[in-house]
Image (cartoon, rainbow, N blue to C red; front, side, top):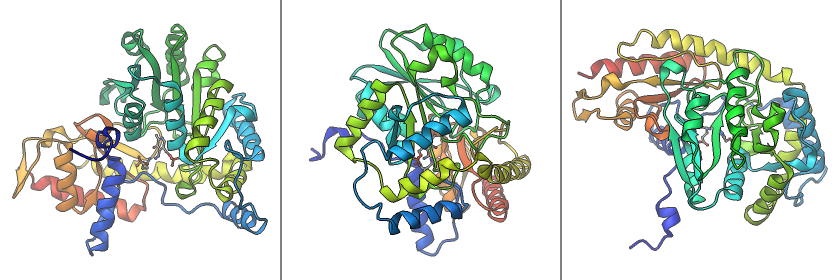
Length: 397
Ligand code: PMP
Ligand code: GLU
């Protein structure tokens, strides 16, 4: 019997991080791997943000911070919510955490009781399901498909709600599908949500600034549902600050209070230096993120054009984030040498070992018919990666 707790034994490893670890190990062993498994911008953090961090060190921002984050930062986030999203969250409705990942864990652990159901549309970001299970909640997944751009309908949501449902968790723009819900689609979901008084929603908007369709739409903008929504965001994606570990929520005060209490026992306030860096990012005009978004769009178009030359795969046109969720099911049942492909895991291992490209199996996101391709890397590497994927796939008979 394991000496470890049931909790950790039953916890699945993050597949995005596991694949990245594996490709780093292969790279260290001298293999020429193109790593498209971790979803992070390849751009450097903007200089003005780095300068703010250096200044913070020199000015001795080196002590414990308030658990929910410096007041100055929470005020700037509150202004950001107003300026960019039309949302009113006062500074005491904001909690800054060690990445949006912790923000999401704080909310789920603060709201979900054992046995309560949490609805999660497929495909979902890897960590939602495991965090729900840690809270002893029951994930209830909703299928979608490529023809509906991997989005759920309001009717589908309504049908999934039971007396045990506590929460809905979803992202827009979505990791891994790149789907973006329109204002009308969000309103239709909000109308369902509001008719169930005990239902709360995590609206994960971390890819807000990587949206090719124009203006980002927040679920909490609809006044009638505002007090049921926890808006999650952060600086990792939009400002290329993954390593700084800053995420945040805007939420009804009783929920932000609970998250602060939770965080006070787990980690306290996040890094003082990172907070001062994030302050600079929050105060900057959102214009600073536009160039990066344009670059992602160019890469998306490039990769989609190249992928269209590979037989047997299907893609839609993702409207945001930096992923393409490729349908690869026509390769199931095929093989090459010692490899036989039965599922998306087999295919991702095959592409890693034979093609030297690291992607993440769709299984990790709840859809075994797909594989996630991140285009957050240079055009040269992307072109080479698609070429390798094509060559490897063509070997499968
Ligand atoms: N939500 C989604 C949908 C993500 O893709 C990520 C990226 N890992 C996160 C949350 C967490 O981001 P971070 O912890 O870096 O702020
Ligand atoms: N969000 C990124 C991804 O999906 C980072 C890795 C992670 O934290 O899961 O690849």
